[in-house]
Image 1 (cartoon, rainbow, N blue to C red):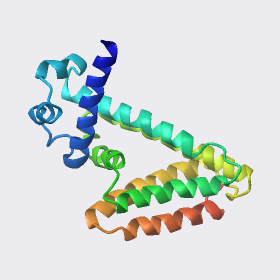
Image 2: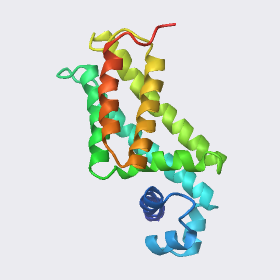
Image 3: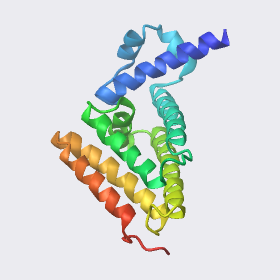
Length: 201
């Protein structure tokens, strides 16, 4: 029974991924969620006490999955330098966007701007998840400094700068419908990791 309940909850969350990443949080009503997921209202409220808490659960579930992917991507690999691993991550970001925008990443870009002043619970879930992503990037930068593939610099500052750059570039890319912005960001990313542009405090 517990497995079935978890499956139903995950199904509703997966439906939310698709709807929120495509339309945003405020445009999607409960009726559409129920219809698309094909579940009764009672089932929804059994797992989520409100739409806001549903949004928070979607964000937390997304980051749980995404962080596992990052851990695999940045795992020690003797055939790759840390710089190569990190650049592969940004290249995947660019490739996913070129292929129509990865649903999960679109969700973060879309909701970050939309719910910051709308829902404190969702804002904190996005903030906490993003901080964990940045920590993975920071750890990879530290590994790159250690294996001499990344120039000596402040890993924390660089990780924050890179994540901010890519989120901002993703938003501008959506506004302009132009991937050139992300391509330029990829070039700037390599430069940032290869030159002493950030000073160690």
